[in-house]
Image (cartoon, rainbow, N blue to C red; front, side, top):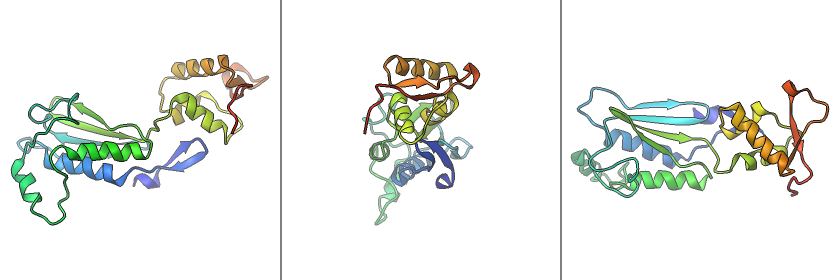
Length: 200
């Protein structure tokens, strides 16, 4: 499903590619370590720029939003032990699944997964967001395209605020990386390569 959704990238519409290992580990963790005393399901939501996996229950034991990569705790140890009896168990050892997901995302140069504790659930977000800075993403886009505007830049940089994007453009103009398209009215403003735009 995710691969069928095109996303605007630096060279045009690009296929979204998530590491299968990361998605597998996040979904497996959600099913195994959820709180089964809560009458709810594991929810998987697919958007054009992210995958969200929401699991019933809080983070188990002494695990928090700050230490989940270091701490180990199995809320449902019987399920974990039963799965470990399989020749090829779907789960890693306790605590290793998330580390595997983080490593897989980094190999594809994507941002780390986001883990958030809500009142009665844990939400893990896999964002299809490159590790590059907005400035680098804009430079990459202009290597393949003649110009860029605020709307396109916000899409490829995953920035919602028009004013935040304007400030990025202003910094890049000041550094000589960009320059406004000559003769363009303010409401149709665009930007092209500046005199200090990196070569190669």
